[in-house]
Image 1: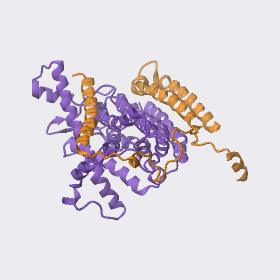
Image 2 (image 1 turned 90 degrees about the horizontal axis):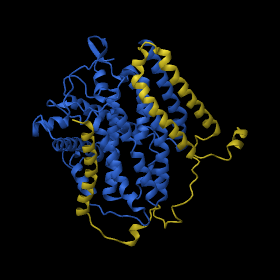
Image 3 (image 1 turned 90 degrees about the vertical axis):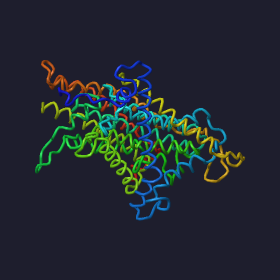
Image 4 (image 1 turned 120 degrees about the vertical axis):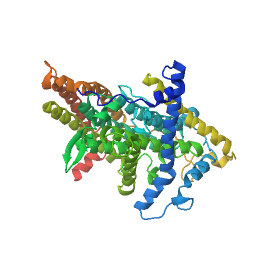
Length: 360
Length: 136
């Protein structure tokens, strides 16, 4: 087994707690510190989703399709972000006839909730000597997969409660897609756990810091994307499907079913859906970063900066796929998921187990 | 510090943020009720029929399969965590650690193959499929 590579870094709630109350904390003081830490991290992710949604996504799509996007408000159009926030929040909320009230209202809250709570165990690296990870339980990876998959429930509720035929179709497609691609995602994630022998995220990241090979004086870290590239590719594809981006954006498919499960949502509910999806893309990126890209490790720059660079690289990848890859049909989607990805992910798991077992 | 306090705190924040945004929005937004606005959206047409229609969920078989595989992944996780340790352990070794899981996955793959042959892994089963295969 691996020995811990470094002393346990202090987690963010502990840092805040020590700053406020000293090293001896009562339970309510711990709770306040944890709340403040959670507030900081949630707002960091919210800010990134805010940059991504109204600005970066449009800029990236414009660059891919050779157009000019938001460039009127402020430098490079950046002031569109507060403008869009105010504009979207100030829209009238229209609740259509015959919706199932509690479910209709809960779905957007649940989607944003499920995307945000996943970040609790993600090692975000440190900046100015403060480690930004909130919690580091031993079941970290299992927790983050569980948190991310609550989103399916929100989409189901939205689809059924909206009393709209497009929403119903979109909701059913979303269920079909998410259950088809969740198993390849988790099984491929499990193939990484074979290497690490632990579910604790900080430990997984620490193990990837060891050098793999040195080429011309540059040592390449043993990121699992390099150790097991096949699993990395599988995971990226399954991740695209989980966040519902092209070629797997069939639940929303604007040219077929208007906006899928989002059709009847307006005003703040729409914002919550949209924001939740973006945070979900970043959560997917954070899982990929933690499992395959060495987490926040990297040269020169502080860890948190590397973490942001990596999750934005994965965000850019999803936007690239969105601009470049045509949408698959729903029956093709199911076939790729159950007949392709599932079989390949199990083959990957077994192969990894055999190779690891023989090499030991 | 117990990690689950921190995770619970994030869950609380994750609820408070959407609720806070909703309350801010309720202060900002206008409300102009009008009958036409609340009709069900059907591309601008007058909606026909209800939404609570019968939908052919031929797909329920896949949902059952999903349950089976989901529980399987639950059982795979502990195995992956102890795998390396078990292989290097005396009396277990590679065969002891790997073969039971091979058998376990094998049984499920056989189940998947059966569902595949039954045509359960399809979005909609097409009644003309058999004819079409003759035409080809």
